[in-house]
Image (tube, rainbow, N blue to C red; front, side, top):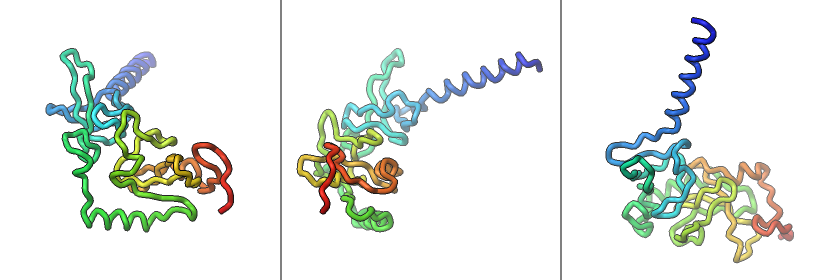
Length: 192
């Protein structure tokens, strides 16, 4: 095989790989799993306004020419799959599991670590949902976040610190866990 032939084979292989990466495996029933290469990755869902993340199960609708019409989450906790978030109640077993995870991954001293429960201000439905400033994903029920240490009532800045879901945004941004300013106003915090 000549060098030109080898280059042609490598080029065809790379083109095929790139094409495969950008295709989404949508099942005959219209369901798919979101990947980094989906055209809707990171975009807000039309049903619940939560951003799409890698691994989200979704229903995809396309029109006759193959253009994307809509994508909606299938997770009942998010409320756009035909069920409401009010129906998402935790069982005792789930609560014990979360308590054990929280105990195993204790927050550094002085940080407000909270599990987001239905009714939390960060979960309020709106066209533009609150999101983590580090990863830009919207906050979802039962995720764990670090609240801004300023404790001012109008400051709702929070970052993910949910090890069980792989969302380590706070630790990625401040590995030493030293936050001495308001995350929103950037003002220095007074010693407490």
